[in-house]
Amino acid sequence: MPQDVEFALPWALRSSPHLPRARKHSLAWLEEYGLLDGRFTPAEFDDWRVAEIAAFFFPEATGEGLELATDLMGWYFAPFDDVFDGVLGRRPQQAAAFCGALAAVLVPGAAVPGADAPPTARALADIWRRSCRGMSEAWQARAAYDWHVYLAAHLAETADRFNGRAVNAAECVRRRGFATSSFVVIDLMERVSGFEVPALAWHAPVLGELRSLTAEIIGMSNDLCSVEKEAAAGDEGNNVLLVLERERGIGRAEAVEEVVGAIERRVAQFESVEARVADLDCLLSGDGAAAVRRLVTGLHDLVRGDYAWERASGRYRIAPEQ
Image 1 (cartoon, rainbow, N blue to C red):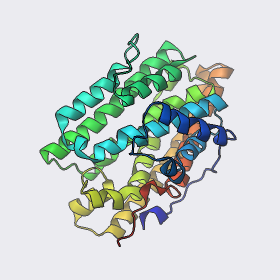
Image 2: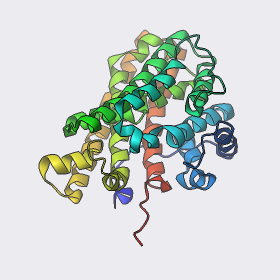
Image 3: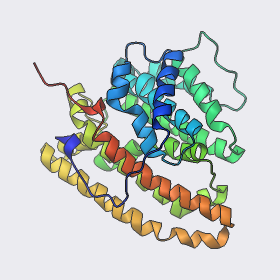
Image 4: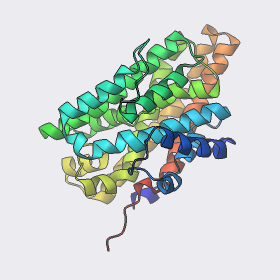
């Protein structure tokens, strides 16, 4: 049921013309860094439509930029996100060491991980090096910060599993916005599409609110599609539908209705806040104002692209019982 759940979005789906190039490149890149390794096969790459989510997210990316974005999507699914669904996601010390090795590659001037380093770290070092190419020091600092927040969000979920701590629905929504890597992806938008928002405009409250709304919408949409998979795995603390079912004693259909309503309210709020973006124009040059507009349009693409991809990807299908 959840992959068939629909909700209203006012933005059209767009896709990059560089999709075939990115698909071919990224499968070879995953193999080069040893990220397939039985966890993620070429057939799953096709069925999960990893390249498609990058193309939907970044329709204005250059060809090289879409390759980078697709590599990042493959990195998320192959060696990182799914390992937390297993043993690692319940062993805080091991999880902290794992994330610490990844965080180390984000430090300015960090040495390139050697051949004996974990493939996950070597691949992330490559992604980070390419991500920083041509971007300002201000961009690199905030992008590194968002990477650390993303890693820390997974550690927080691990600690909760280990300690048996149950979060409430509001906290779950807020944290899922970080754990789905939306803020990292928003940063990457500028790099792969060839623009950069001026630092002071980036931190303007109106743009911060739009980014937070984007992350929360994507987090809840992801929870709608992944709820059956997470319920089957017994991971009930990191999906807002499962949290609502436990917290309020409601059934799945009612939880779906509540989450869809919460998403649609945030979409309406996004449109209301977006109307204030023009207020920044008096503070910006023409190029700065154009970059802000590209960011906001890019946020539309992220939400709409996520919606389309999650409802088509094989990643969230549950195999029928025999």
